[in-house]
Length: 239
Length: 210
Figure 1 (spheres, one colour):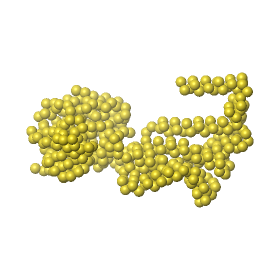
Figure 2 (cartoon, rainbow over the protein chains, first blue to last red):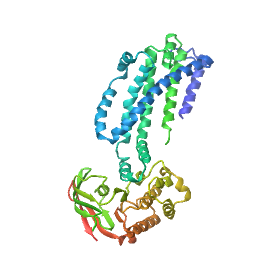
Figure 3 (cartoon, chains in turn yellow, orange):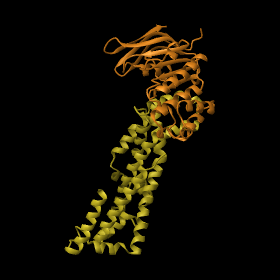
Figure 4 (tube, helix red, strand yellow):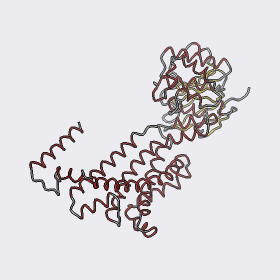
């Protein structure tokens, strides 16, 4: 049903482009948009800038995961670790990430590192908290934890470690999805409004400055679509 | 007599109330634990195993914990989720695989079921795997929390015979079950623990020797 609705909307838009004089600021002409998009250099440029944005988001998210996952698991298994880490995580989470960007610029300058630090700072508390909530004893896993604790003498370390990771996995996946979505927002905003020379945000802002409204709408659509596809991919991972 | 498991002056806190047991010593044979829903049977069984702590009193266990077997009420949680049925035996040290698989075949398993993961098996199949695996680990004490909840009649009979055989070879079993015991196990009961609520927030465990 949703696909039929989408198809109807697209067909209506194409028909409207032929039949009515559309105000391109509110709704670009379908034909001219297709003409803009179906251009090799436009597409190559789009692909390159989109990749750069996702590389920034990906790098920050991966670094955050490497620290946040072990910390989340430690918080779930150790009360002392939790009592130390939780207030710090809550403190960092409470600071709007945009406030930290100038600080990162002071420390590491205007460049890739400051953007990646933004993503790390955003992603880290989200993932750590998600992993902690997933791996801690709760109604769904308390008997599993109890049983494998009792039987740990008969199991290898590898199995026990894998069990811990298994319990944390739902939190890892949820945290990663949230972190990527929010990281994308942060990176695109920094590309648009802080000095940048690459990335889909930068490209979109250039389109706005040059009144390339068709391209701007298309970039917005592509970012939304890319984010949706990445989220779908992560949500379908099975272990 | 060698102490297997003993509880003295035990008070167990759970939910909104307290479970009290003055003195209890695990006897060889079958110990039956009965009580209404929500009275604390599962909590008591976990305390016997040392999984839950006593709020006060003393628990003495003369056995290595590797000799304590347990099939929880939520039996799926005793299985390794990413392993097949076969893998759920192989991952544990000291299990002889073939006799265990033969026992599962008697309980209605087919060859193709051995390569399925718990998520691909029914509740009853998972419960059978959990029980057979615990027996294959050759514990000295086996704690069973509602071991028949998902089994069909025929499997209940076969499982009861397996438990009876375990007792005859010198094992002790503590079982909480709402189902009536089959005759093969009735004759093995050496004590009964009856849990009853004595007030709003206190329940007591009465020990009856058979």
